[in-house]
Length: 129
Image (cartoon, rainbow, N blue to C red; front, side, top):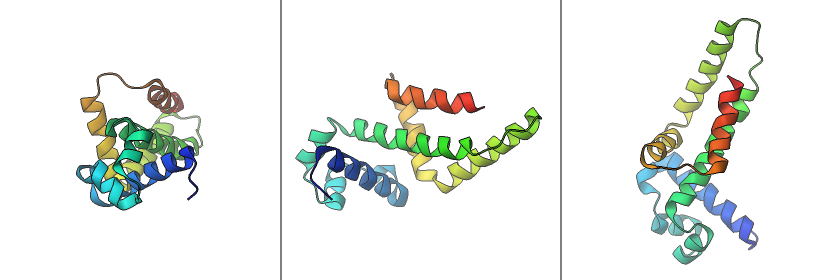
């Protein structure tokens, strides 16, 4: 890992994501992220002013991954077939990324205003359907 600010930021996102994937959202704390990443708590807060901002970045990445999979669905002329194809991809993604999806769901339940980039990712997903 190089020490550029963007590389450290992405490393922390990746490490936080791995913590959530393997252990669950309740294990994503600044202290546990510091232990797993080898970065100080101060570095974490320099990159993300609070843990909610880190969660936002991980969620955007999760939505982007889902978008990439859904984009691969080849639409047919029948709406019913399209809906089933998108639902199959969606359900498969959620089941194989349960902890990340739970984090995304929890975020939506506790966040009053979603960041513009986050809203944009949701709009992109909806436009596919």
